[in-house]
View 1 (tube, rainbow over the protein chains, first blue to last red):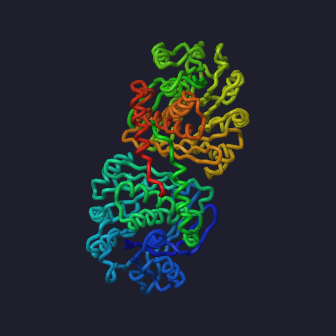
View 2 (view 1 turned 60 degrees about the horizontal axis):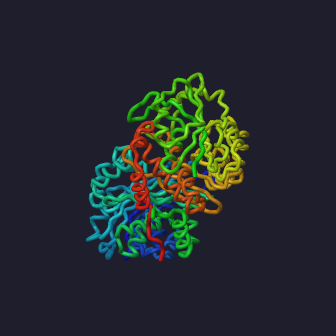
Length: 303
Length: 303
């Protein structure tokens, strides 16, 4: 099955200890859509300004991403500027220019309202809810968010969460959303807000998934070169939800496998700036790294 | 096979967000010996002062720990005072009184020199080396250390490491020892210093083991109540090395299983102050939690 995503398409300017880039392709919707496109067809709902180059649109089209829901409007595209220090787990936002996102009201093109798999990438929870209202009968709604919305639009976010099946957030945000320092307790609080599944992203420490009464832990792939963590969470979300949509299987076993596929995708993305690694990635590399995750985690059980 | 450990036996005073204790039983040797004793016989080499109560010695004896190498000398027992904030991964040392450890020179009692499994718990690397010199032909030498010695006695530590098979240190210390921020590169540097295996302890994020060309990742057990992380690393070391000594099997599969047993032991220890949880722990609980680690990490491979 295909997957509908609403999120940002942006120009990112990023500085890490290993280099810097200016105004490169970025945005939560872009990373998600590209990553998910390795598994299934993607419909992208977003907005860009008139300054957005055809070259980037061509790239997305080349990746099976349907751009029927990508509006081009007068004005400038969304811009983000950030910096990472040696602790690559933490992004320091230097500047955010909402630009065309300030007045964006998502409207689904005809046919999109039948979407069965929906991913609400990290944008204003009010916009997330607006998209959701236009989808008739989604089978799975997954949602990402960030501290900015937890602090600034808590009520809207809680409203959106009531319609969400799977919430993906990072560790500090899970604690912040639940107002509870212990992660296991925080997960229980969040699962009472609506989602049936909580995926806690821990950067280089991997992922914890809380689902009903079980917990699944997956490591991050230990890399010698982490160039740029920008988009790692959205790329994870794309692999995770993309795999689920491709198989249509929402069993716990499938969710776990999806977590590993998400981790695989994120591990590639951080190897280079922007979506550069995604542009050269081939599906056999994904399978090969999935097998490396098996080797990384396997141990003999008790007899 | 039995295991010989040299380390500290101490009085700890600890404050966490969940309570505080004064002058309770602690020390790297104590935690290690108690944890390892669930798997095999332990010979403890250490020193205490005349203020050390018979009650604590009785506890260690009750746990198959041979105290033939535990000297009681005039003076006060080693004391440590520390505090943890909500980030339980980081201990803030408030006070260290070496006391009887200032003049301690370990001398192995007769019979101990034949030890096949040796654990050099976290003490002065010069003392670690002195113990090692007295052991005739060890089959396995594992070693723990800390930032204090990496900074203060780097040369002595590097000398000790040349005789070590398995080094266990925490993540920040691995980076510090290798002088390299990337953990995968740091591991390669450390494996060139002598150890064939590097076990990186990451607190609530689990453990990474670097062994020859493979990496193994094990999570920490997600707990709702972490009362006191003091001794978690030594308790991990006790379960890890204790299991290896008990089986005598040093294959990679056995090392991985040992990592999980170590993680199981640490997960129990943090549930209460001092060695309180170790005092009530029964072996069937260890096996039950091992199986929970299997459930926590398992996923279907690619077909």
